[in-house]
Every structure is written in structure tokens, then in C-alpha cells.
Image 1 (cartoon, rainbow, N blue to C red):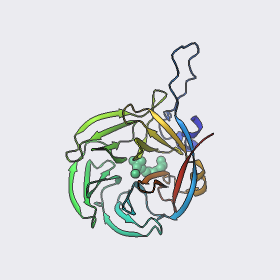
Image 2: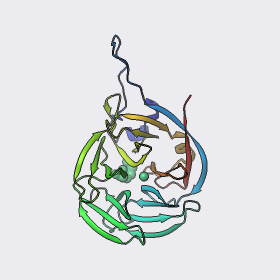
Image 3: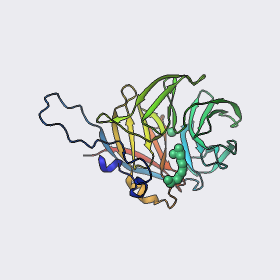
Image 4: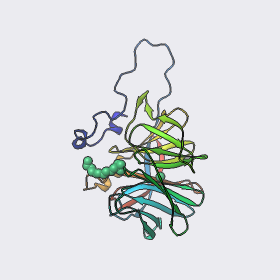
Length: 269
Ligand code: DDQ
Ligand code: CA
């Protein structure tokens, strides 16, 4: 597990050294029953589809036969509707050019998108990607998804905030933890089958977080996909999880990746 969540040694020096995985050995002599650890999964690649290698993927979701994607980097941030099979960008709308686009979620017939440090959260019509409204948002914006009747937002720490989808008021928070230790740099999010699945910035794993407690229940080793893509750009990290609930299909990609992977999770024996 430590290995799965370990990240680029080059970046280890630049980013906070704590990756937020358990470093302590199990305590000897304790009689309390050990809590069940996370289930570790490998991925089986079902299909590979083209993905715009210039898309700095920040948010990804599936809706009604299409992928919707938000992209980042100042001056290049967009909201996009994408053909999942060809990777063709069917429609795109620019995020204001001075802003850095981040996570994306669908609420009703509107897309909601974060910005990294611009302090603003946007809404767009699903049909036509027209800007609907923009509101102040007092946190760093990283990932965004919907669970039940709330939005869930990450901010680059271990904290996930549950927000009112209209007012964005924070209704509760959880801390993503593994063996009780906070797991920082939670990034792109997707709620699937009752867990909040998260990319962790600069790790080669996706984690499944219990929305009640914050405990990590699942760890998916994505390192074969990261190796296959071998992104040259240091920013080209694993990022982007989408799920087609009708066919139970998982889609994963990364920033500047030329490939969109459809995968199946296989519990490690
Ligand atoms: N964020 O999307 C994770 C919030 C920010 C992305 C910033 C991209 C910079 C990439 C440079 C990597 C070298 C440290
Ligand atoms: Ca997503």
C-alpha cells in the first residue's frame, strides 16, 4: 500500500513529504480487533479511446452517452462535451482566460465547475454549455462530484466538503484517512457505488473513501496505466474518473494523456 501511494521521487522533494499513508507498524499486544483494511484492486483495461493530449484534465464525468470534461491552466481552461469513443470535442466553452479551471460536476441540467485559486465557482447549462452564473468560493478548488443531494469538493488537502448545491454552504466535512492518518492532495472525485473515489495528486492510485467516516475502503493500483502513458510533462499526472451507471463502465485518464482508458476493477488475490 505504501508503494501504491508513493509518488515521483523527483516531486517528493518539491511537495510535502508526507504522502499520508500509514508509516506505523501495527501495534503489538493490542487486543482490539483490527479494523478491516482497504481492499486493493488492479485494473483490467477493457478499451482504449483517444483523449485530447492538450487537455489538462481537471474534471471528468459521464452523462447520457457523453463525457464532460473541464480543463485547467490559465488561458486554456474550458468546459467540454466529448465523444467517448472518438475523443472528439463536440462542444467547448472557455472559462475566463485569467482563471485556472478545476473540478466538474453535474447538478440537474447544469454543470458546476471549480477554479483553482480564483475564488469563483461557475455554473453552465448542460445543453449548449452556456454560462449560467458565477459565485464566490472561498476555498481552493480541486475536485468536485455529486453524492445524494450534495456536492462534494476537494481542496488539495485531505478534507472533503459537502456543499449545498445551490448556495455552496458547507454542510459537513470529512477527512480522508488511511489507518487513521490523513491522506492529502485529494484531487478529482467521482461518487460511485456509495464511495467517493479520488485521484491523489502525484500518486498512481485511486482511493475509495467512505463518505460517512472518511476512511479509505479501496485502493486501485493504476501504475500500469501511468507507465503505459509515460507522460513527458511533469504536470501530466493521473487525473479524471468517470462512471457510466447504466453499463457500469469506468473511465480514467490523466492530464495531457493521449488515452482515455475504460477499466474494470479486479480485486487483488
Ligand atoms: N492542481 O490542479 C493540482 C490544483 C494544480 C495543478 C498545477 C499544475 C502544475 C504542474 C507542475 C508540476 C510540477 C510541480
Ligand atoms: Ca469525475
